[in-house]
Length: 384
Image: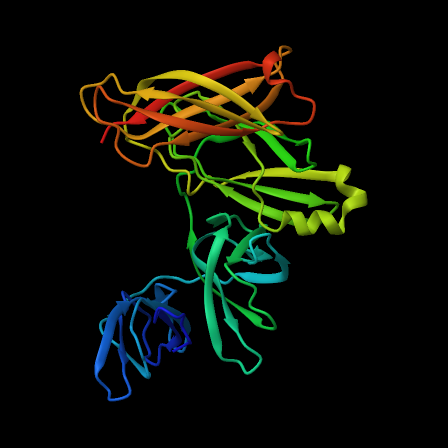
């Protein structure tokens, strides 16, 4: 058990080893927090980070307890498990680098490679953080990575820590399964990513992705920033609405963990920054949800520095409520050049014949004049 905060919150990190002669899965771990008199303060059932364990294989696990008071000790034992027979694939993980983030955390960048003759699906990937004595102090799942790798693929991944862990080591843990003949999303990068800069010098990445199929597809993709061959930052984008058949959706993105620190080191080379879009064609799955058109009314445009705030009202003219009511925006110059794009969605259901206010924040490239731009806005939602 690790120290907690002043409110009595604690978290437990441990490592589970499969000492049987079989592969096991569906494992549950029963964790109990005790006081100094061995009275039960709190208990919780968790699962190991890896869903399956081969004989002699190990997996870290983590549990978070809130308001447990004066905790003195912890016990953990296996609750349930079952035998399984799933093929496991090897991955090669390396080139880990750490970058401070502006919120006081840490971005860990790395590369994962598929050395197998078959494609593999990554079921889990993360880093166990250990102190100089080798004791585990945190467990960090990946934030951005492709979910399937073809033979020989070597792609970047990102892991985020909410704080700087100091002098530590990172031990990779993963689970991967060989796969063949999986359905891959027919999404394409119809406009290669372009690197622009805001008035403050922050990179603004623009591009477009198209659904070439006859059914809607949820979309997941990565943006990787490089100077020469060095990876500076990675971001993962998962829009809340699927792409409709034949739809091309523009995007603009500026939020890259650790990029400020990286650009400070490469200030003289900032003009050489390049971007790559990697579509996760395995995680981008077909959608059977019904998209419906909503009404949108703009009440105010407010440019502030390199930001444009679009305020308005979104109205649901349908009888039933809709989920993920989303306003999509694309801003072009009078010459048709994409300048920025983005979306915002309501976290709650929008009932039928009701409206809600929204504020959409868009980043503008250097030299853009909001008064001279052309705006394309639409609103869509999903039937429950």
